[in-house]
Length: 287
Image (cartoon, rainbow, N blue to C red; front, side, top):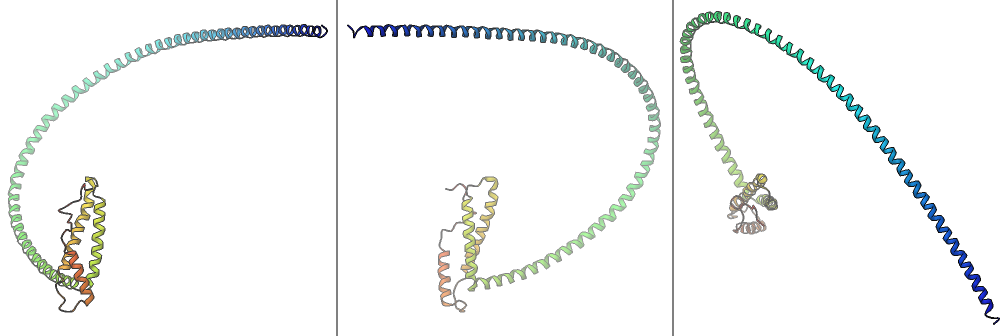
């Protein structure tokens, strides 16, 4: 029994403390709710005050706009009145201007009539004088034309003789140059030096073919650039074939033994069929 009673007192004390704690919490919650209510009331009052300020501002703005509209309407009325007066003044000025123009036009017509009569008289005299001058001029022109015809015929004959002489001289000179070039070309192409020239031509042909093939998909407006390379490549190929065709034999001993063997090997390779001539076989659109 002694062990149970103390526990009962402690339990009552604990319940009393719990009750006191709950009372304080309740008071704290009531205080917070009261503060929140006061805060909400102050916030609502601020909102009402701001709304009132906005309404006053809107009313003031509306009053300002109304006054501005009244002022603009009055200014518009004044401006329209001024415009009506100005238009009336312009109409009066235009009426006076038209009257002055009509008077000036009448004076101009009368003056023009007098001038036409005077001009017709002068024109008649001028036509008669011109007729006489034309008759004299026609006679002189006929004589001048006859002299000019004879002079042109003589100049044409002299020019034909000069051109014929120049053409004959050019043909003789061209024949001499052609014979000289042919002789030099024949000599150049049948010598060991032609191997070195041929190597340069083959290198140039390869460079041109590579460039042409790389640009096979070029657009049509730019094809003239590639076509120029194609013409050059075909010309180089023709020159290469022309050189090797002159290598017939080595009876005169111009070539050394090893050089002649190399020349014949190069000739055999070059004369093999299958070389492409771009003029007959363009590369457009090939893959």
